[in-house]
Length: 87
Image (tube, helix red, strand yellow):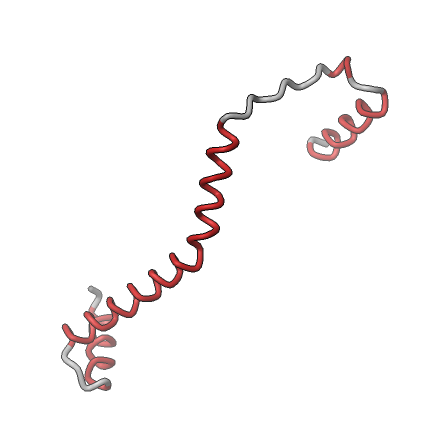
């Protein structure tokens, strides 16, 4: 640990009336609680993402139509989009 960081940790520990090791343990426990809270907050979203990925795994990939199979309007749109992306 850099000496300036070590000095700051020691100063904070002393201000809290704690030894450095106890202060560091308290900081680690507080961080673990924040991590657990964040994990809990996103658990439903993570489960939904996992379920969607599993469901999508069984969907066959769609085949893209050839450029020639597109309507004139669709070909013009493709050219506009590609032209704006690759001027």
